[in-house]
Amino acid sequence: MSEARRVLLVEDERAIRDAIEAYLEREGFWVTPVGDGEAALDAAEKHAFDLVVLDLMLPKLSGEDVARHLRDSSDVPIIMLTAKGAEEERVAGLEMGADDYLVKPFSPRELVARVRALMRRAHSDAQPQRDRMTFGELDIDLAGHRVYLSGEEVELTASEFKLLVTLARYPGRVYSRMELVEKVLGYDFEGYERAIDSHVKNLRAKLRDDPRDPRFIRTVFGSGYRFDASEAA
Image (tube, rainbow, N blue to C red; front, top):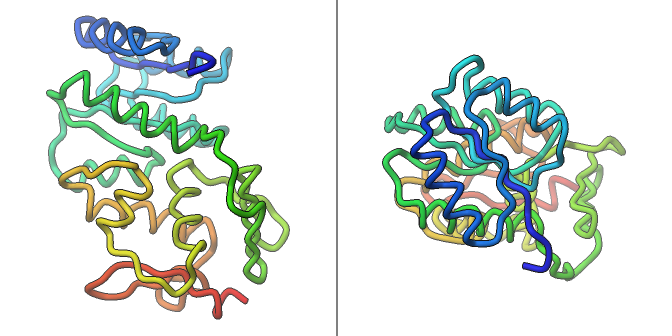
């Protein structure tokens, strides 16, 4: 890594925070550790971070509120840490704008792997195959990592952008949920297959794509999703 990436670590349990900080710094990341939600937002205002590791159960301001505030002004990748194991709660975190999540207790090595995967996805220096993809009113700027709908920029998270590009590169091709997990996240994670639906839901909402009569992303029942270029044209 030619330049240290900045990670905002938000965790109120000191022992967990210290352990995560040590693992990340050992891997070459520059870590800013904070212990509550207000301190997290204060740090985010002062510095530009490349990724946020965010616990949900925080004093002063909850992790959910921190995520919402961050998403109001930034598409910085967010990994949520939660002791809540129910699937609906994990999916709710994704719908708030998180890119990934880990349920406590977890291995710090697994967290580092997740951080690296998100970093590669969000900050890749690889040259795209094409600079732009245009489908009617939808314009995808691959080089600039920007998306425009009817000339207006659409703010997408790193996961949402990667999902859209993956589908749009091969219009008409049906991707299973598991394929999208592997292509968008860069690894296979048990339990995430159904959660990809949350990213699709968020993406559709931002593209004003009615799931009952979609222009861009169609559900192929029993199979997965495909991008419909004919409808988008």
